[in-house]
Image (cartoon, rainbow, N blue to C red; front, top):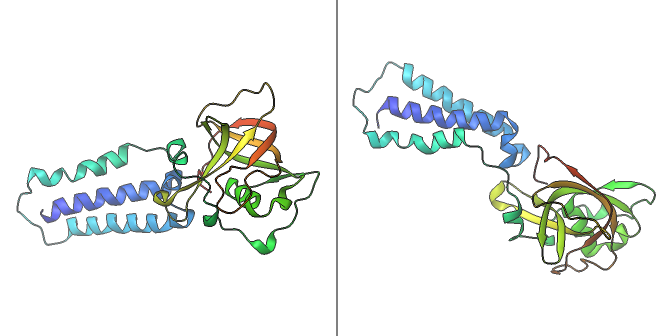
Length: 226
């Protein structure tokens, strides 16, 4: 590959990194703190590509057509924007409580008479080890809908670094009589109370249950992962 071909490939990869980092698209792949490293890396690659093109040293050798095929995945990445991970992953990785990070020192019973916003992973962790924190309290969970033979769930994916290490956390929703389950992948806000005794125990395969007082369809958030 000659210098000009190298520069084109480098500029294309840098442009993809810039596009992902400067928009909300990065949140589909990596954690928040990786936004600016992506932007800086993309800008550096584009800058190096332009320096190579306009430097005094130019290669005259022609590049093989096969070399330009290297640009194909870059073009696809630039044009196609894959969605965030969803139900397919959630059905295969769920409720690994040992992976949840929360401050044990801050665990205290939630106040009654108000609705508390909680992460789905946080709710799962509290139900498994600190059920008394949830008893009698109203909480609001936000996530997308998944289903199985037992009913439907409010589900959320959590990442430590990037989408490759995503874990799924889900809470089964008891919507009461006559309430129709939302469609798969529909984002919802669910307000309700923990059903005591469900999801208790570290390592349990039982899923905590939320007795829903209110289910509100909503759009997906800019940050799809917890």
